[in-house]
Length: 558
Ligand code: FES
Image (tube, rainbow, N blue to C red; front, side, top):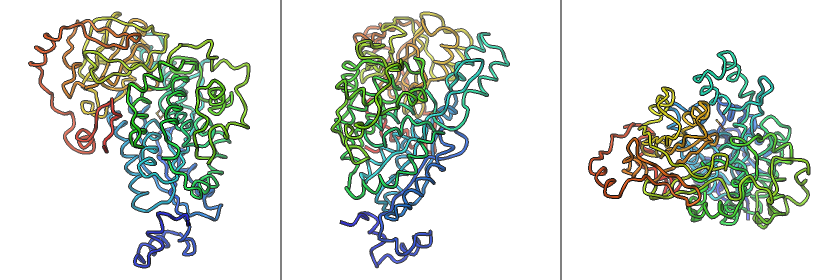
């Protein structure tokens, strides 16, 4: 079987001479028309450290593809949204919806131009799930390359990262940092290319995807500026060719077993709650049934072992220094926490890939042994209750306790919440409710990193909880519950909570309730009026029409 399974439609049909003329006009030699076509895409763009270097990496990959002399390599681009830049402002409304644009545009160009294989380089939070969703839709040989993590910044002997900059604001408004130091933290938090450095959403998803088998070993942990990242791009051609030759497709790699492997690594590393959304979206796009209850089952049976930011000490570059993601996988394999029989984009199984790679060093303290976990169960907890009938996702790392009961203080937007925190309205014992920020209400289910950072920065992290129908950044920490479904905009019970109501959050019984009787909630419902959508035209309006709820991954195509 020739390897140009798709592109032959364009290149081998004599009734399409214009298509062939256009392809030749774009620089592909006539003699190469019968080679497989590989689309080499990225979310490269200026103005965001996570994405600024991706087109350079894609150019190295194109050279690697062409050097094999067996394939045609064709560069393309799609967009991205910086979560770090948009957090705390209206730009964040576009963040989650950008996942769909990325998936749609990779699908569109690869479908329209009949690419036989896809290499895609992704950098910022939504880039990775967007890329994998497209690969799952297309189901053609595909590899995802991660743009790599940023190096840590430094100031006054302290290691900085993007969350240091967010939290500096809380410190500033509370007089805990000088004006000059505030500026220096801003200047030094992001010292060059690469995605945010902790186990936030980008590093979480990149790691999950490597463990799932869709990236080469080390892709998720080799930093953006490392020689290893360069080498990965320079060698990608031979791996792509192998996938084409063996016709290994995403459906051979993304399976219930590999999804479980990915969920396990997310849990032991303390990854972002956004993974709950994205893993459901990836699995469902691949036709695999995954829901919040299955995620909870992984949490119940998997310990939290890694001391990584946001709630711990280490960054992704530190994980790389102790052997990277493969060393973590080897540890998991030895502990029986990973199914080594799953296939990967090397054409080999996980166990085969790991065979010759080094173990974790003995003297490391980033990953604890199973016998001495940070927490016996995972940190991502799925809660249900009278204000979360279809579920909510909490991040409970153990630092903040497992139960919280307090009085509600309600804000109908993130801006209102930020002002409330700034003006000192939020007091110890409060449960801050931020609503109308769900997939349709936000719109786009924005992340509440600014309010959580302001709470931490104000020193209220230990005695205030925050619940929302929005999301949290992977950088958020504290007692936080997000993804409350149904969302307020759809008439979810979170819309009926009033200031002063007692809210009880319990990560042992996995419940989230407002202590108001069903009759009283019903009376409040009768008075409730759905507010108008915040956006009435453009892409976000389309998103409001199409997006499904958070408990099913905020998909728009099914
Ligand atoms: Fe891109 Fe954080 S802003 S990973």
